Length: 146
Ligand code: FES
Image (cartoon, rainbow, N blue to C red; front, side):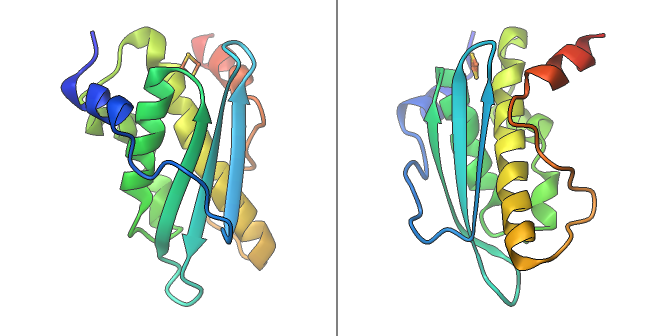
């Protein structure tokens, strides 16, 4: 049911933990399943490259695996390029997720967006294409199912 990559990132999550001096922090949750994800970003002031990224996830195995992969994918990208790390990009990098677990990857995308939003707000900049994150991604799911 789960790909080898999903199992690997679940069993050996990359970048788990906190960044006490993070430049941007984003927390999102899904009220339906109760899972919560927090992403920390450390950004180079001049180049805007994400130097480090860590996560803390209180959630299911797929949420842990998608957080882990998402942090790997955003590291080394600029804050602008990090928008390319969509839930689809994360799922592709994990060789897919079962349909009922797609919302877990949405949590990862939203957590990255929330951290980028926090960074942009604190630094008075705009990241084109970045929308204000929702605290609860449940709404988005419901709308997408319509
Ligand atoms: Fe909710 Fe996976 S079941 S994030």
